[in-house]
Length: 304
Ligand code: A2P
Image (cartoon, rainbow, N blue to C red; front, side, top):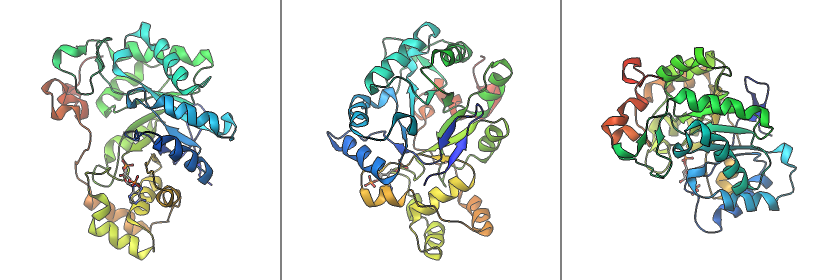
């Protein structure tokens, strides 16, 4: 069975979950979720912007595992950052997923876009000047509603968190960021964990473009443990206390991704050597205005 990580408010979160980004081929996602739950997955990572929550909601209705045994995460999209829109954003998500509550609600990105925009790569005109602390205070206000058990953030760098934390009534329970062997973010992970913010790693296998699973070192470690490179990459993240949300639509790989191996301390140490800054997702690649997003430099981050 999958182990839990205890969040800073006592809520238990399974350390392995199923990612659902881009799993949007008609019918395939519902099938995958049912298969995953049969195999023992209890944690499903969703987001409004993935555009597939209605299908996920239908699949969740058809499984027999009690709601309280599931851990469902979703994320507020950037066009709902204005504080007066945050509660509606949660209601929209709950309606799509046909749920009464979420286990975890995250702010998807640390910057806002205008309420009528839905862009994944916003133009400068589409950006909305909403201070992140205003959005966060609206998130804090949701906790009393019974509609969400924990709140957190996603794609937040250390500089923003450092500025936010002293002003928070409730420290984020989770920061979900891109983590895989080619984007290890040691400083950010250490900082979050020291502050009691659990780290979830998205794209833990590097997705389809980053060739983590072809890495020679990872392949050697996999051979030594008679397992696959994917299992090595996931086990490495788990050994750092990071929650992982790999996605697969294949039953064998779904099953494989639940099976941890124990890496030696030498192997873990050597992982640091293959680290680089190879990101799949970076809004700063297309936009000068957003270069600060993955910059850990305080001076580069907008004032809260
Ligand atoms: P598939 O659905 O055919 O298994 P990430 O979670 O890092 O975004 O990576 C997802 C990609 O990795 C998907 O293309 C998925 O393809 C593939 N994948 C998932 N699990 C494994 C595995 N155990 N071995 C190899 N590829 C995997």
